Image (cartoon, rainbow, N blue to C red; front, side):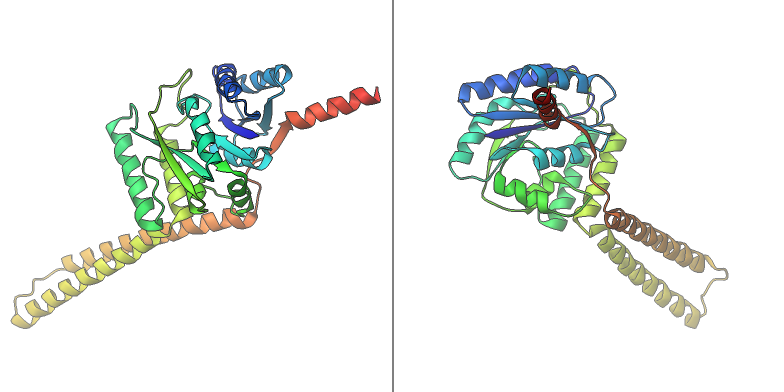
Length: 316
């Protein structure tokens, strides 16, 4: 059986169509499946749409979060609660083309334990977004040896990979990188990013910047290394200024005033404050991890609700 994990946040316009499209594709393959929608604390009628589908279609399941925990939490909740021998993570807006799922399943049958769908292009993204995306992926590649260029969350994973990801203890997760970090035999297929079926993107520029910063600091110590680099550059600059000042002093051409002192103090202060800020940010991440709070809280699981209803019916 294959589990299709579909994170959903304010996707009321897409739920029914997404279930119909993916279900129709899988019905043609003859593969048994479950469609696992994870409602990430939506504020619209997303959960009501999911509940209605679970009543009509036995292949549809739903998990409802107690509040919004983010897409990473939704993905890992799906991985923890899915029953399939393999699982496919796909966006609810169908920008990830579900027509690739049969091809993914075929590669899985051939022995590949991870099948990654990579973007052949970045779709209709603006110049600024493209620039920051490429910068982010370059930082990740150079600092952690994990190549995420053109990568997406759209991928199939064997049960062994799912179990490995579920065993990772960290609270702050980056699925796209962790699914590559765990290893296993992998294959890639390309896809073109499709326009959203309905609704608007939930990712603002601010959210994307926070997402990138969290993932860089949770997966690499590059920012701390940058502080060391700035300290070395400042040391070289300070030595140069010191030699220049001594030469002018002994040659009798030294100028009055403290301009050089001011410059050195300002530069030193800047480097120190930047360094403290980066160290403080890493400490805040350590603080989040050692609290060991759950990545998500599930308030409703339609599977458990169905089982409870069946038990009550038998008692009656």
